[in-house]
Image (cartoon, rainbow, N blue to C red; front, side):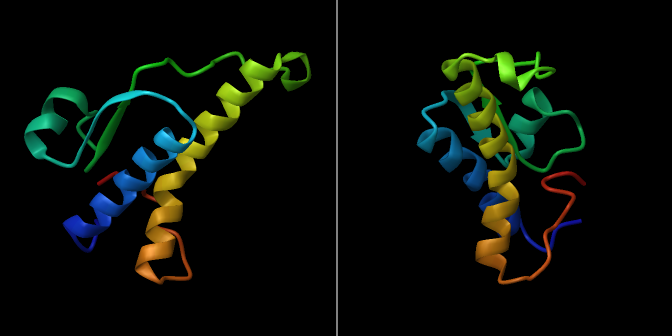
Length: 102
């Protein structure tokens, strides 16, 4: 469980910033329980809803076009950004490996 709502907000804001910096659109980012009941998986304490679907055919990176590679790279950046935000703002030398999960 997370220490505070602030840690969850930092985690989700890291995801949101990565979406903005990689020019990937999203429709909602929330830590509000009402919104999580609608959009979440029942385990997350925070949530971001991407508009573009993730690229699922990651079997052969060598055959990707530059736009496909950038899409996969930007997905990876948006995923790890929550952990990185927590690391930067918490001052801890360890990552919270649960992310925004309960």
